[in-house]
Length: 134
Image (cartoon, rainbow, N blue to C red; front, side):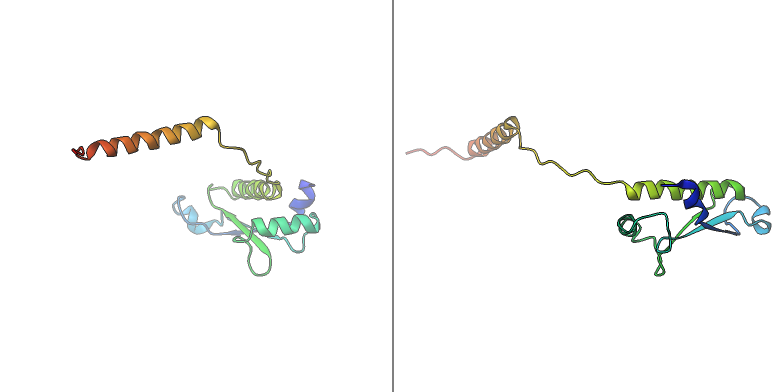
């Protein structure tokens, strides 16, 4: 994956942010919104796109555009760096292949312990009953 080529496909928009900053919030657009059109991207194969669409299924809009934002910092430059890093981390996570689970047997000691506890519980309950006198 070519990070620089991928970054060139990103679109940024600066908007006014809420939160800390006092009067600065009302004057300066520090919140950064990142837009990435996954469908039009040339950096991924069709298989990778399918995997990413599945990974981003709740984050993509109807046009197949991923929208992320950052307003953590009071600096527009810092927010742009943060949202770009967040995007790259999500892409790496989305392309990661899950390992296939290997099923294992239940250990004999675990089975034995379960049966012992069942037997003890049964004996405990049996001792609560009044004895049978014939």
